[in-house]
Image (cartoon, rainbow, N blue to C red; front, side):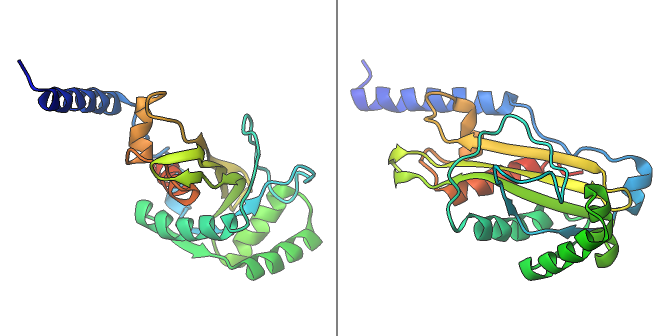
Length: 222
């Protein structure tokens, strides 16, 4: 008869094999192809600092269609964290472009100039691309960035993060690619497939969840 200790070990081993099987069967993100003409000309992308969702905002200055995301708490440091993560992860995961990362003050100056010329979202994109010498404009918006309450092994409330990234074509101002991330961490007992996202069997901080979400959606970046 197996000892209780050995039985527990085999039980955990069996569980990990099952989880690994689920993960290996999960669909893998692939880069989305661009039309050949755009793919040949899109070499430089200007990256705008992350924006905050505002329930009273107008459609200007950017067309950013998002459905299904429920906005919520946004921590004060969310914008700075997301900008830092994007600066680090984007060139690492998407190495075929030259990225220009705008500072907040530089972006605000450009935006003011653009809006003095036109309030049409596509014209604003074209203006920013032309002024920065880029063929693409990448824009991000934060809808939720809620820190966990508790520790990595025990929480009262889990971290919750939601954001979107949108790539516009500088020549026309139209959307080339858009992906959303919307996740409130759940126990693995509710969804074992989330192990591939969470990375470890622990409760993540909001920054850790955002980092994994960014890595996930950038896998489909064209």
